[in-house]
Length: 108
Image 1: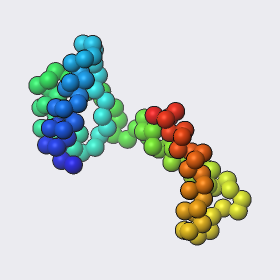
Image 2: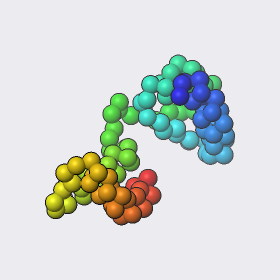
Image 3: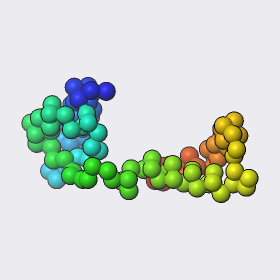
């Protein structure tokens, strides 16, 4: 995805409309991906008077997938015996998916 596509598809078609339905204190939160910081994106947000949340370049506590991967890694490491080859790891992941992935909704 490029900054142009992000602006045209995400910002113009979704964020701008959502902001219009929200209160005046709307605060837009994205991450620090390069395309989110493109000049064309900044210009679009400024022209629409959309305030962007400022946060550090790397905020793992705000990234839900990091929590999911951490949970998954801990469960795999705790298995006795732990997986020793790729096919065994795949089987373990398939078995654990029913336990871990329904919990993703709770994290997000």
